[in-house]
Amino acid sequence: MTTKVILDLDTGIDDALALAYALGSPELEVIGITGTYGNVLVETGVRNTLAILELFGRSDIPVYAGLPHARRRDSFEVLEISEFIHGINGIGETVLPEPVVQAEEGDAVEFLVAAVREHGEDLVIVPTGPSTTIAAAIEADDHFAEHARIVMMGGALAVPGNVRPWAEANVNQDPEATDLLFRRAQDVTMIGLDVTLQTLLTTEETAVWRELGTAGGDFLADAADYYIRAYETTAPNLGGCGLHDPLAVAVAVDPSLVTCLDINLKVDLAGETRGRTIGDHDRLNDPVKTAHVAVAVDVERFLAEFMQRLTSLAEKTRATEPAAAPMARR
Ligand code: RIB
Ligand code: CA
Image (tube, rainbow, N blue to C red; front, side):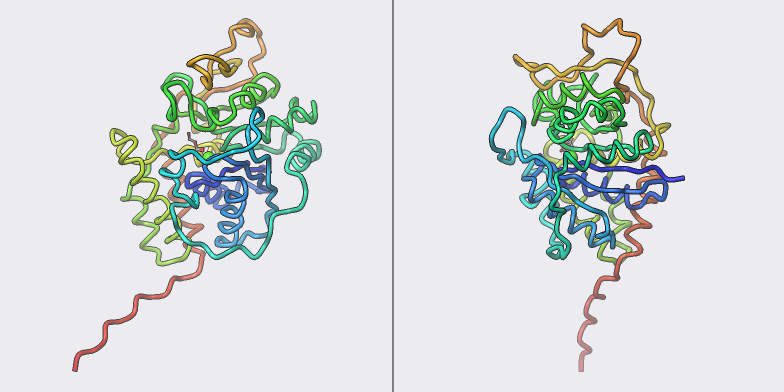
């Protein structure tokens, strides 16, 4: 029996790895993808998603463009730090052919709302970017808020933020949206920096993909190596890059990979802690806890699953041109 999943991506290198994880998971049926702004503009993220789906032969999955900027803003500009970490094109300056299949004409929010109405608790929504589009779906339909099962990458409970001392990148983009999500959605699993910065990828692993000699292997290795090089500058203490978004998808497949704390969450919206994800004091004694924050992760098991799934996915893509043989000497 498979679990239906919708990914909400700001594609982004680790979003690309998360997408590959989902495509490489026989337990999941990806019924659609919504795109958000964040690491890149929404249009760039959608284009990257379509190109990656094409690379892995999955252009049958519908992709919808979500909202282009935060609730309290009227535009969005990519942050310098995002360009540094993900590259200007969002996928580490790797070059993928222009996708043939286009995004759906329909509305991402309507798609999300209808999907939860149709599939209920058989569907998991995995947002790995700012919460803007998901918050809009919550506002559009109470049924969505009550029945959507959400496993999101974002936030930091017991560790500092990664773009500001208190704020993690996805929540930082639209704190009001994540706050609304935490207050209204009834089943949210938060995969934050507490666990994602324990799951690290190094060039030792990416070499496995490069050795496959396939288009998929080359893409994964080139994009991830770019990401690892960026982490060597921004967080040299870690010794690898954080597998943020793939861990959220992995938990959608297998919740036993993490240990969670049940808690009612909110986001600080004012002052220097704006963007901080923290327990909601007003709901401290509410017996119903709507959020489950991952506080521990089985790193070894996750990394083994990650490598197995992405490697077998990449293996099936077309072989790359063999290097030209050196000219024979006379
Ligand atoms: O903080 C990590 C998150 O920020 C990831 O989702 C990454 O893709 C960026 O959006
Ligand atoms: Ca992301």
